[in-house]
Length: 333
Ligand SMILES: [Fe+2]
Ligand SMILES: [Fe+2]
Image 1 (cartoon, rainbow, N blue to C red):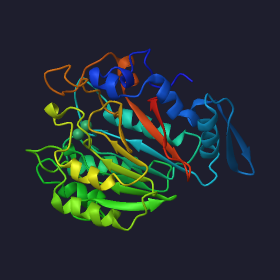
Image 2: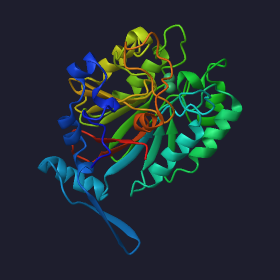
Image 3: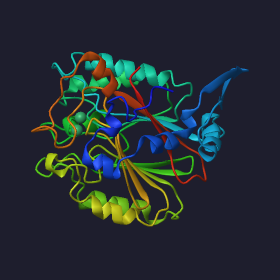
Image 4: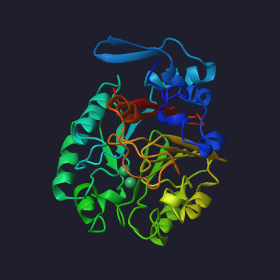
């Protein structure tokens, strides 16, 4: 399969500099991790149902899990898209709406209907009502049962997130946080973009919510946490971290499987700390520089072909009883 980010083609996953070498996922790990997507998936349509098989797997265990997930069998399958920046205008991407449309079309062509799609923030570029209407309208085109969102800092410009919450905050608590359960997995969606002076900040009220939310859960419940800004210190010099995340991390330590999925950094990056694995997602809008490789994290102008390679979507699968989620990052088709 050629559509993985790997270490040989200059794509984002393995070119993030020193932190990636120390903590990032090697190409081999990525392939194993992505095992169930790794084989050729054969789709058979029988009585209107799509049944898929993994025709060739690189890893027996991953292959078994992969086959179960790919075939459905009650497995959870969802999609993460991020940083669509609807309303952005600049040479780094002259048509972010077109790129996001391509991403939506790719979600709809995955060969399965995701249980839900999570947009992990920076839905809009400037938080205008028109941009929120546009991105919401576009996301109604996703063939999925439910669309979830968390806000990015670009979604709370000038109004502390009020327009965001009016558009996407129905049923949420506090400044827009919430949790939900499906397929035996507990999901928590956090808001860490509202403190402009300490970008990447949760606040005590939200941390209390997490504490109460987790209190009754058995430690073998798989936990997935969504936030826009990473909950790990990816590059604090650029605000790519959350200053009080350790209080939430401490609450997550007793769980056997925790996965934190974020956006904001516009590039793939993976890091494991004990029981917790963090995965930064890429964007559908424009690339940002690797940590420390520029004076500031500003939109990068790259040749058209390279732009397409930098944008993408992520699919995630989970079979009950497994310790890890299977994650596949794909370039925009
Ligand atoms: Fe962004
Ligand atoms: Fe952001």
